[in-house]
Amino acid sequence: MIDTIWFSKKQPFQCRDLLHQKYIVEGLSTRQIAAEFFCSRSTIKKYLKEHGIELRRPHLNHGRPSQPRYGQRLVRGSEVEHLTEQRVIKVVNDLREQGLSLRQICRFLSQIGVPTKKRGVRWHPEMVNRILSHNPSCKIEALTGKACQQTMEAL
Image 1: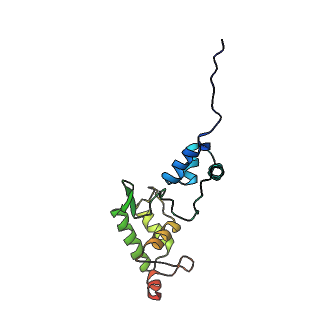
Image 2: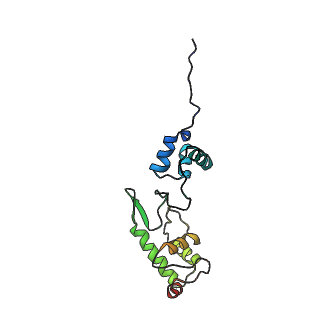
Image 3: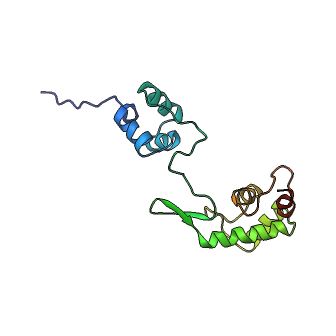
């Protein structure tokens, strides 16, 4: 007598119900689902289309951000203000209003040891630019690099 073990050749991402649960109900992105099943995003997209599950437009919020913005944190699934990061945002705004460049602000934050969102040691100009552009009290023009005061006067 020969014992035989049968393995299913069907991968988990090929199951319509599981894809529906992950993509529609839980609101995961194709990238998050692909990481969970150790496959590519294009494979997930292929099976979503094959099962008739409508793809979301890529620029829309998928309901579950991978990481909250600087100055925010997740508490029980909802975003709330991160008070320490809010103080850093205020300092960044003040430094920009004083006329410091993005690189100078980065150098200052790195030298005094302010951690980045992911607890990194070194700040980058793009990080500071994002903080300034997402903060309603002080918008800057990324390409021209004008100081916040000049931008606020133009509005």
